[in-house]
Length: 388
Length: 133
Ligand code: HEM
Image 1 (tube, helix red, strand yellow):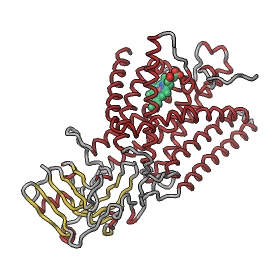
Image 2 (cartoon, rainbow over the protein chains, first blue to last red):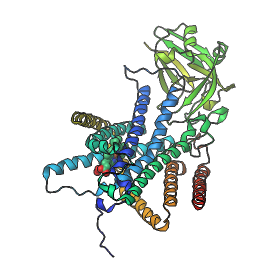
Image 3 (cartoon, each protein chain N blue to C red):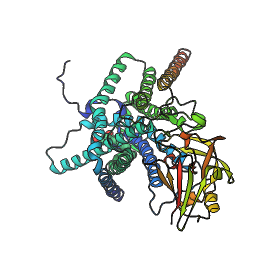
Image 4 (cartoon, chains in turn purple, red):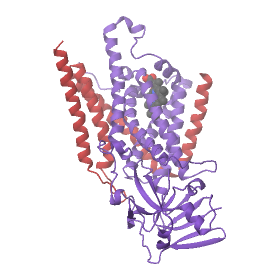
């Protein structure tokens, strides 16, 4: 039989995976994955752009490593889940609008628009997040602000989507995938097959999400380093830790008479590298935890910032602004909140894994504080300024 | 349920509007990347998946085998997608000597090999089990 090609209608799709029973469950899982992404993403946003009411603990030292790892890995899990969900609801793309009923038509149009925003935003977050995790930026916009703005679009459109679908979703979620619905119960054979296929589709989607996580989790989970074939980067590099930004890229030259400057309201002090090294040193195992989800731990040796301030006679218990030798660039300076500035594990490190910091690791000294994003662990430190 | 839905509606509209407002300054540069996903998916990816599914359904009649091959294809496609930013680095990406520092083609090949080896093993085991009742 030869048919004239035409736009398909929802009824043309007969595979069991197109059932609302499947769509609602995949939706629920996606909701969890995107919810985790949003919560941990908000945390990371506020750590980097702290609002007055926001505080972030310094312990456990791996806290940011964990939240950001969850952020990136739940995003990875959402990739196959999103594709599975869109496959499940693909027939609904072809639902014909109720053209003759103006009120229903406008409701339909609004719903379509909200779904379009949801799908656009969901794809955008996963694609840009994935490229950013690989530190590749093939676009013309500024990633952090765009990714943050679109996160609100995803969450907003997701809430709208749930508001619209709640009755269908509740009915679907409370219908067991195994039990046959009353109408179909008479036709035992094909219905059993259909429910088996639905379960297989869901099982496969969940399994593939697990595989995707396993394939990448080595970027941050130490015991998976050797298992994950697609982890974006390794955990080793010069002096045991990879380097994001080299001294050459940051155009750093350290003057032979380099001195660390410490400034506070009403006072100032400077120290040479030898004087810094002569102060009591502390060694701590702390992670570098990038916003890209990658993380690795090292043993850092240096002077606790709080001790340094005390020995200089500067006030403690206040936020401290750390400035780099780097002339410009987004991360040439960072502000340690009071909690981090007062933590004895927050070091001005001179050594990494027992060796003097190489220029690329931040020679002459770098900041390393517990539970903070790597971009705020300022390298090539020139100046500490105690704020009010 | 009515109040819950109404609440979700209001919260959702507010969050969407906030996101849109945040996005406004960059909208021009972002728009193609926003629209690109669904267009590519709805026009290209989904029809292709449908065609592959239809073809596979004709070629593989054993249902268990079909299910496992489908799973293998889904897993492979996912790994390929995750590998795209690792295998393809557009020139506009800034040079970054610390990255990439792993052999990604090898990693991808190993991942795909493990998946398909596992599927072949599962299929052999299940078919031999079936033959010995
Ligand atoms: C990022 C997350 C999500 C995306 C991208 C998404 C996407 C979609 C799309 C494109 C549709 C088709 C819309 C239509 O009917 O025209 C749909 C339908 C649906 N979604 Fe979602 N969804 C998501 C999350 C959720 C959540 C959290 C739930 C609730 C548990 C859910 C439940 C449903 C239900 C019940 C349908 C209707 C299926 C049908 O009638 O066949 N979805 N979704």
